[in-house]
Length: 308
Image (tube, rainbow, N blue to C red):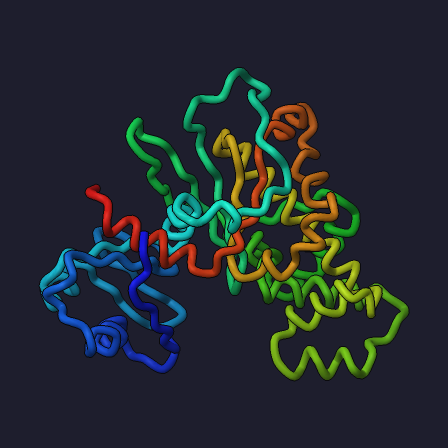
């Protein structure tokens, strides 16, 4: 696959996807296009997606009619999942190699692949082979109930319930969740927040400030917050491996590549494999981190180019 042109738009500055397309296509001959596919953050029902955070309603049939091409809509995690199949191999960092068998017998030649992506939210999807190719099945698994497994995580659950009521995995495994974990750990620490750290958190991206301080080991609370984040990520990655009976798990999104030293420390795979009677099975499941920021874009393009 060859990328001919890319352009970035600030979605908050636009009133609809149509406006972004109008701008993108202003310098291109529409007749040269044969189709389009868009990965949208939210469920797609009958070719229509309602993007809650933007107030957009995206209708594939309406776009097809307006632009005279075949338009498809898929969930953004479906796009990321499909993208993981077409990226260069050096964009997939191996944390745990796949084994030859699962705990319940030999794996098929094309076992399911579970995918989760962390950024402003948490998305989950499964790639299932239909005998010819992998198809991406969407889910809203990120909104499933958070299940703590340690005393620290039980404390975190109580802390988050006080803030939000219902606590999903997305409340924990996201950029906002990272800040919440930090504030929980800080609330239990006798160490006061350093002035420089408070400034960094307030100045821009709080999660990046916490990650930077943790990886440099400049603040013990940040170190512990990232440890908890990594451990919980490993646990949920193991959960979706079990649910999908997966041969491998791919972890993507905007956060993981920033955390590579923490993800490679061994704590993620330790929790991934802490599955009681199924621990031997999960040890055979491959775990990879997707570090290609354009994975969703490439996945959507691959979908558009493939007869469905």
